[in-house]
Image (cartoon, rainbow over all chains, first blue to last red):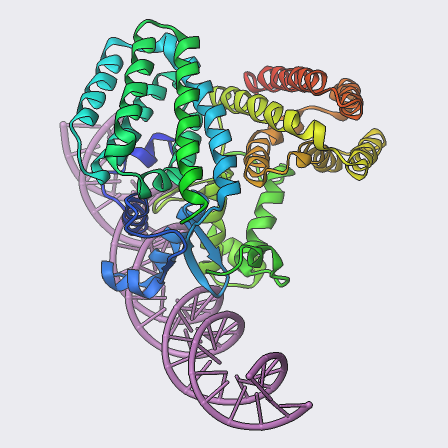
Length: 220
Length: 220
DNA sequence: GCTTATCAGATTGTATACATGTATACAATA
DNA sequence: TATTGTATACATGTATACAATCTGATAAGC
């Protein structure tokens, strides 16, 4: 069997990877809206390739929960209902709290500085797309020190499949201030190695986010 | 967008589904061993189809974590190391406890009876493959009343990617009695609607399983 | 008027064929 | 002898071509 490293080492990227990344990013940015159909031929000509690698990419994204495939009917950007959003937020609270609790004792100085720098970036961001990406990176940096790749992957998945709803309707003005304050508090607790405090703050942070998403999801 | 039901409604199964299910099952049964290569052509002729739907199936299984794909080199049955096994067991304890706690208050009479019947089946099973499947079904039946499809899917994934190691080396004689006793205790707690008790027993049950897997994983 | 059949058009699913990348064995060299 | 280079065989990646299925609009029936 090949070394596990091989997958990450490969410098040149395969066509399905490129396509998958494009679609994933477009979904995160809400350029592709929930429920929208993804046509194989359209994507194929866009990238100047045939439909086969496009199909591979769509399968991949199905595994990540971003796309739903219906045999003979096509691929659609996943469009979870309020019930599913609640469920995913429940899982996120569970898993992100779990990861953060394990992360807190492991933070290196460099990792704390990375979080601080991402937080500083967030303070000065106006447009929605950049906010979304940086917010994602900040949270990823918070959990990374738990050193559990599979756990981090799961969290990334869950965040990816619901966060776009958070960014879709809310303007930075409306959620920015509260969100930033919560981020600052969480980071401060991490710096003090206060795992219980950090986890409690994170849970409140996520519950607030869920409330926002629920309020916009009922009347779209 | 098609109704969500459509996916489960489709009575006739597509070729990739059939192939994926075969491979999945073979991995669960340890007919396909960790690290073993899966060749497209071989699978294609086995099912009398071309390599395209086989590739689809492999992509799907990659998403489920059962198979790892290396570009231009092939597909291999995933072969997690002890570190990863520990990590997955940690996630299992977290998620299965979460699901069981939500499930306990929801159990219907029929659901309790299903658990009891699966447990009875387990008592009288000798061969390893049947034990594995029924054990899986018993646990699934325990968590099902939480009524959270995505959570149940995640648990199924995690169980699938590590349980084969549990069944691989241990004989029913060695782990059967303890395991059965623990199952009986958990079910009894569910019948008494004792969520805390059931969760505590389940966590001990899983920690025992992890210990077994660790002890066999270090000297394979 | 409403429901059910029917039939193009479009889209996906799959087979075949070819291109590209990888692994093994063997020869050449230090 | 060990190491590097090369040739060959083999497996995977992708394009093209064709078959199967779905969608939507129109027409027939009640």
